[in-house]
Image 1 (cartoon, rainbow, N blue to C red):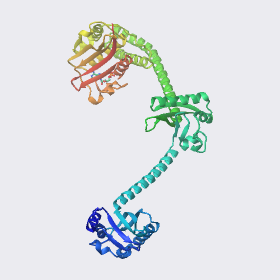
Image 2: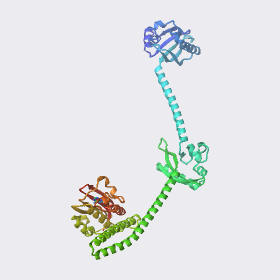
Image 3: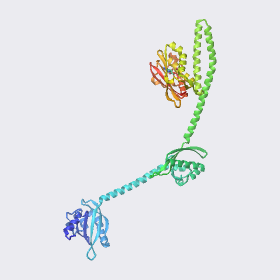
Image 4: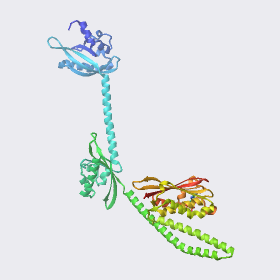
Amino acid sequence: MSNDPLEIDKIISLIPGNVYWKNRDGYYLGCNDACAKCLGFSSSKEIVGKTIYDILDNKFHDFAEKIHMNDNEIMENNTPRVLEEKGPDAQGKVASYLTKKTPLHDEFGNVIGLLGVSIDFSSWKNVEAELLYQINQSEKNREITNTYLSNMLANLPENFYWVDRDSNVLGCNENQAKFFGLKSSKELIGKSIYDVAKLIGKDKVDADKIRQNDIEVMETRKTTKFEEEIEINGETKTFISFKNPLIDHNDEVIGVFGVTVDITERKNAEKALIEALKKAEAANIAKSNFIRNMSHDLRTPFGGILGFASHLEYIEDNPDKKEKLGYIKQSCEKLLSLINEIINLTSIETGEQLIQFEQTNIQEVINDINVLMTAQLRYKNLEFNSNVHNNLSAAISVDKTRLHRILLNLVSNAIKFTAKGSVSIEAFLSEIDTENKQATLNIHITDTGIGIPEDKLDVIFDRFTRLTNSYESNYEGTGLGLYIVKQLIKECGGSITVESKLNCGSKFICKIPCKLI
Ligand code: ADP
C-alpha cells in the first residue's frame, strides 16, 4: 500500500460510518468527511484541534462526558472495545452509535491516542426497542389472558376437570373441587381416578367404569356423552358428563377434558311428566271405556224404541199419527248412528283392534261400497266411477275391515257434500318392492261437490269438526267421520291428505302400506 496521504484519505472516506482519531488528551487529529458532516462541519480539517466538548452543543454535555470517559478508559486499559454511545446525528437529533475504539501507539508501544469507527444504528435500536416493547406487551397480555382464563375456569358454574392419559387429575374448577367436598381445586390435582371415586363413596368397580370411559374417549378421539347416577348424602343425583380428548400440538392424545352437568332437576321433571302422561293416558282410556259401555247400554233400549216405532208406524192408519211415528223412527235412527260412531271412536282410542292383514281384492271392495251407496247415489242422481289400475288387478294383503270402513266414510261424505256430478274412486299401487313383497296402496276419492276452504283443509280431520252446523245447513253429521278415518289409516301405518277447491269438489288421497301376495 502507498504512503501517499491523499490515498489514505480517499480510503478512509470510503469507509462507511464515522472514522476519527484523537490524541491522548482527547483533541481530534483528523476524521473522514462523513464524521465531519455528522458533527456539523463542512470539512474534516475544521475538526482538528477540537475536543468533543468544543464540538457538541451544551445540551449534549452528558453525551460528551460519556464519550470522553470511554476514550480515557480505552487508552488507560490499552484495549480496544466496542461500545454503544449516544450523540447527535447530522440533523442534530439524538442518535445511537455502535463504536469500535482502538488505542493508537508510538514506535515504543506507548498509547498516544485512539482511533474510533462509529456507525449510526439508531434505526436498529428503534427496531430492537419496538421488539422489546412488543415482547413485553405480549407477555403482559398473556399474563392478563391467563389470569382471566384461570378466573373464568375457576368460577364457571358447572364442573370441569382435566386428567392425563392415566386419568390422574391435572386440574379442575372450584365447583368440581367443592363437589368432591374439597376446599380448593389444588387439593384434587395429582389424585388418581380411584382416589377421586373414593371421595364420593364409589368403589373400584365404579372407578374402573370411569377409567374405561376415559380410555374410550382417548382411543376414539371423539367427544362422548355419559349419563350417570350418583348417590350424594342419601339423594340420587343424575349427571351428564361430556368427555373430550385433549390433543397436543403434535396431534398426540395427552388426556381427557371433562364437563359434568347436574341434570337431576331436569330428570325429575322428565320422570314426573312421564308419570303424568301415563296417568292421563289411563284416564283417557277409562273415559273411553266408560263412554263405550254407556253407548252400548244406550244402543239396546234405542233399538227397542226404533223397533216399536217402526212397527207402530207400519200398523198406524191415521196419517197424522203415522207421520209423527215416522219422525220418532228417523230421530232414533240418527241417534243410533251417532252412538255407533262413538262406539267406533272409543274402540280406536282404546287401541283394541289389532291390525289384521287379509287377502283383499280392491275392485271387489269398491264394488261392495258401490252397492251399499246405490240408494243414496240414485237419490241424488250422482254418477259413480271406479278406476282400478292394472298393477292392482291381483289381490293384495291389507286390513280389509279397516279399509272398508275408511272407504265407506269417505264415499258417504263425498255423496253427502255433492249436489250434482259424480263421485269417483281411483286405486293403484306405488313404491312396489317385489323383493320384499311390499307396496303402497293409493286410493283417491274425488267428488264434484261443495269443496272445502283452503284454511280448513287441516282442521276437518279433528274430532267433532264440522264446517257447517246441522241446524243451519242441509248437511247432517257428527264431525267424527274424518277423525275416525285418519285414526284407522294411522293404525295401518298410512296417511291421508286432501286437495279441494271451493264449489268445484274435493279429492281425498289415502296412502296405505300393503303386502304383495
Ligand atoms: P261429518 O261428515 O259427520 O260432519 P266428518 O269428520 O266426516 O264429519 O267431516 C268433517 C267436515 O269436513 C264435514 O262436516 C264437512 O264440513 C267437511 N267435509 C268432509 N268431507 C267433505 C267433502 N267430500 N266435501 C266437502 N266437505 C267435506
